[in-house]
Image (cartoon, rainbow, N blue to C red):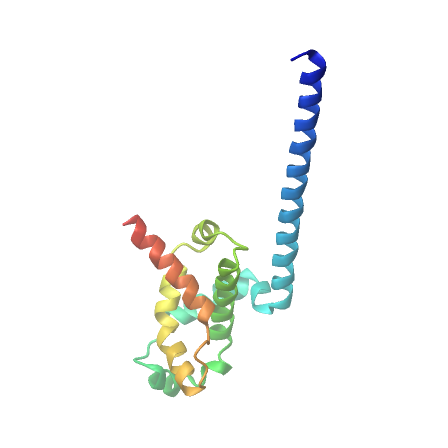
Length: 157
């Protein structure tokens, strides 16, 4: 194999690497645009850190036995801004995780144990709302997020 053949092979490989790199870049850009579109269409994912940091302690401090007890003490969950902010935020994150648009490592790093604690607090409310409003898929992506985090923790243990 002569110098010309080696040069031609290197040039061809360079073009191939460039094409593969361009395809990867285009795929990543499309994924980023898709994620941005979902975030833009879902206002719960654009909620500010202040609203989340105010809502989480309120959710965590709820004291109730079941859905009916919650409604009696706090009223309809549909009218509870903190409940809405938190459940819809985690619901949106769960959807992004399901679609492969965010990585579970990133969610775990950013939210650590808040997903488990929060789901534990709202699960009876969500289940009651599912029955009361005949809406079996309510907060399904929040539950999905919780299940993914739980399986991950179990795999590590």
